[in-house]
Image (cartoon, rainbow, N blue to C red; front, top):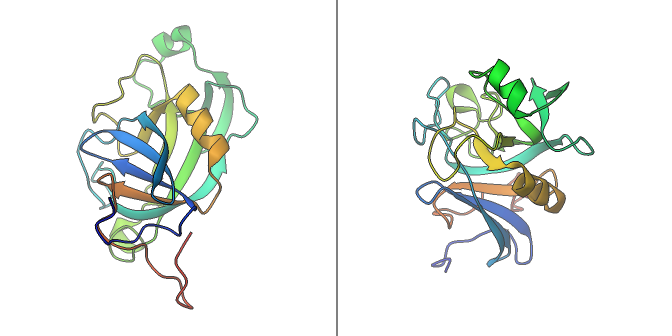
Amino acid sequence: MGAGLTAPAAQQRWLSVDLPAQRLFLWDGEAVQAKWPVATAANGPGERNGSGGTPRGWHCIRARIGAGMPEGTVFVGRRPTGEVWDRALHAAQPHRDWILTRILWLSGLERGINRLGAVDTMRRLIYIHGCPDSEPVEVPCSHGCIRMRNPALMALFRQVAAGTPVWIGSRWPTRPIPLRAGGRRRG
């Protein structure tokens, strides 16, 4: 499956987001543990600030936000607003970009590709997050983030830690995960 390319260490948890298929995969080494439909950027892939695209390449989960909050919790600026999404709240604010339930905040690992300067995923505030039931998944329609159904996001959130590697592009990485200083693989 990996065609000689290296994924994170055997039996290590990692994620891949297949942009063409609009799917997120949870891996344990080279074995898929779970997969879920997602929605990525309406503008397609893109790393540059202001592109509205979903950034490609190797990332990691920088922070896990929302543990213990109810499903449907509304977040603004990574902080819960005290609201829980429902159809009436949505109808009252139909143009709001809803970030719900949990946030997995991504940070790029590849300098000049998705890290630092004009291509910094973390500074672009790119997350894996929940979305309203009324919003589509399996089609590119986000502002750059990776949207999931709330129950799926809660299941994923329970299974990943901060630092978990995330590949965005195709189902399987097309290049090795970057090395840290000292020659160890990230993640």
